[in-house]
Image (cartoon, rainbow, N blue to C red; front, top):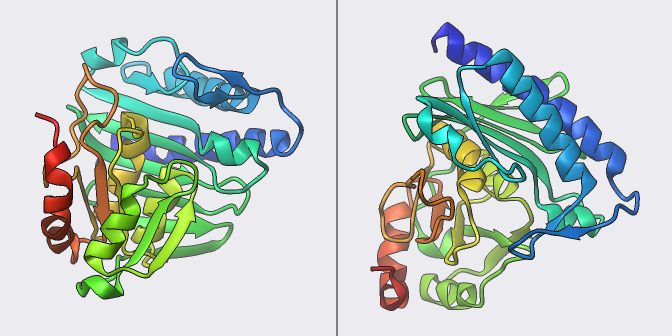
Length: 276
């Protein structure tokens, strides 16, 4: 890992931890809930976390672009070779409900490819991070572990993780096709994919258009560096397209070993709805 990328990883980790402290102070404090243009909720915790992260990244990496979920500027990041992609509070619905399934996510793109990611869970203190070619690690205070995905290939043995607040009705059909019985529902996308990276889950499928670039950037490199794989529903890599912030072709994240078999098995179920 080159010095600049190593520095970026340390700075982003530090900012994620600080943002987590800010969010934790707001947790279960009765914050007012506002609605964005797409009717998704936002709170002062989202805004305070984002302000801290963006100010820190701008100050220390002035030559990098920034795309952040709550920021008004959604275009200038396109002009940079490297751009930060920030979700200051992933899992806002769980946060509002007083549930702990939320995280801070900071990722970095280079030429529109994910090369660095941090997912920090403020309430548990767990932090997952990775940089391209450097492996994936998890730490909690002084505890540290290098992460690897499972090698489970047998479809019936797959442990599924799905959304708590955006669970699609088609998930039941997918479970039936794959023969799955073990499902866990989790809020933040980062938290779901981190479970796969640490080997406690094997598969995440989001067949809808709920995910955005900031949902995928940090988790992607964490998962791939742990040995996993992430694509859309049709085997194609996640596209960090400047003109399209939403992942309209869904997301499949897995331990890697079962990935092809899963997509092949569910293809007949999904192909009729494939975007053309």
